[in-house]
Amino acid sequence: MKCKHFQKYEGLGNDFILVYKGEEDEESWFINNAKSLCDRHYGIGADGILLLSPTTKRFCDVRMSVINADGSRAEMCGNGIRAVALHRSRVQENTDAPLLIETDQGILTCQVEEVNEMEGIVQVDMGPVQWEGEIPWTFADRSFRLSLLRVGNPHAVTFDPFLEQDYVAMGEQISQHPQFIEGTNVEWVTMRESTSMEVMIWERGVGLTLACGTGACAVAAAACEKGLAPWDIPLFLHLPGGILTIQMRSSDRHALMRGPVRHVYSGEFYCLRYCGFKGEKCYS
Image (cartoon, rainbow, N blue to C red; front, side):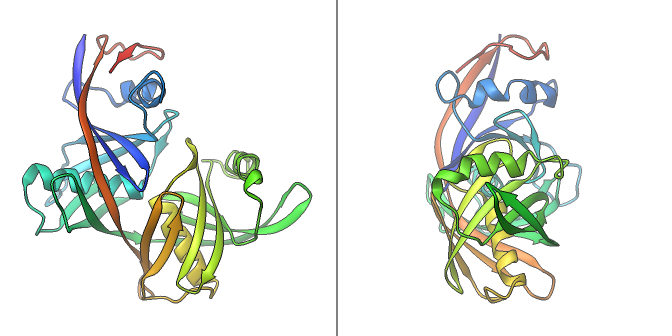
């Protein structure tokens, strides 16, 4: 059996297993065993896995890959990159210098602030949010519009009011629709005022979740593009797990995300030798 050490982190209740990929490790093993590891009854329990590996990019600290709880790959994770930034700053015992982290979305700059032994506030330049327009949609004989955006990963945002009881069926219908070849994340937005909004999130490969950093960036960008919120000042997004601050920069459409992240605990899991087949037993 092989022992792997891991760290458990959470950002606004969006929780992750953070683990380093060794030279002998295959990413496919973590993909095949994500369901077992992320199971909240029989495994460690998490919304996903943050897989860290050495980077070949100059000046970068580490490479981050994101695996959802169902074993699918995610191009980016906003809460996840804050967790990685806090972890690396704790390991290096350095919170002053910005961290450059390589992701599938590119190289992102992170600044860890107000850090203590277990938690901190992290700001990340998430890069440009791509506005892909709006499309009409129908759910339960009701017509409305979806704003489509990309923050490395795809998002469909609606500002129309819906009942909470509709979120699961609606999230499944939209996220798995053939129109979205890669699937999509779904966000429901209620504007409180121009700089404050409530957000519910259906995360592709996870389901309803307490928070989603890229989803918050997509919502903020959509609100600015539609003239519902101002550019270039902090916007406060109230998610089920807490508040994220997003500032949309009008000059280049970059999203500046700022929010808390916390180290929960460290542990290890034991697995049969990496055979690379689904259903392999994991013991935590």
